[in-house]
Length: 225
Image 1 (cartoon, one colour):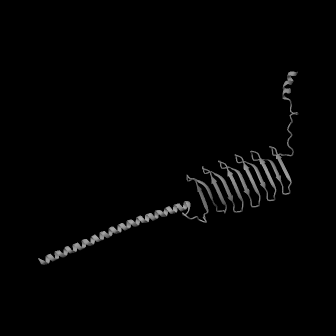
Image 2 (cartoon, rainbow, N blue to C red):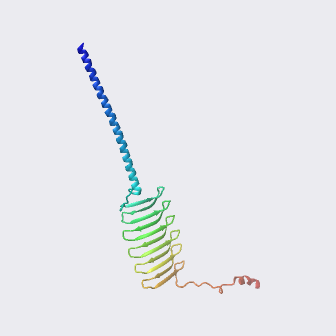
Image 3 (tube, rainbow, N blue to C red):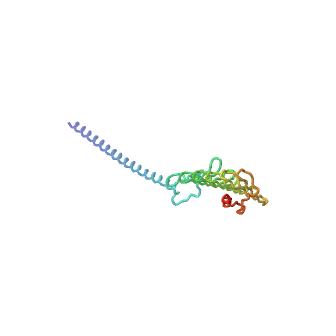
């Protein structure tokens, strides 16, 4: 009887010890869960702050600092609606270009600097046709070209590489009708052409008022007979 009681007591003691250890394990597990949850929350806060800092710095730069140099091959300008309004960058040929677009994404102003040193400024209308072009070439010649609404060149003003200057006027078909120039020696020239392309050496004489027939007299002539 005594041995049975001792065995039962030992059994109860073992169960109590095991239950106590299980409770300790559960408490440790709950503590670890709380620590893990806190770690996830802290990591999410740090990640959110990092994303916010990157977003703000990408738009306005790092707060309190200003970058001395910003390097890129191309910059894209966007309007409040996200539409592309301008592009500034270099192409594979080494040319540098700045293109400004209107609200309908149509190029209206272009500034180009080519790899050979040529530079140009172009203004286009709403249909995309160049209306005014300013150009400077590597041979030191310069020109200004003006076009009408159909895209036809109407006026060209230029200075050649030898120092001569010219101004040419064209009709609606793009055919040259008048030219004015001064060469490198200071000699001037003036040229006119008619609609057939024939050069006019002297302006055609216009009939004066005295030479014009009296239409009233002609009309009254039959009545005088």
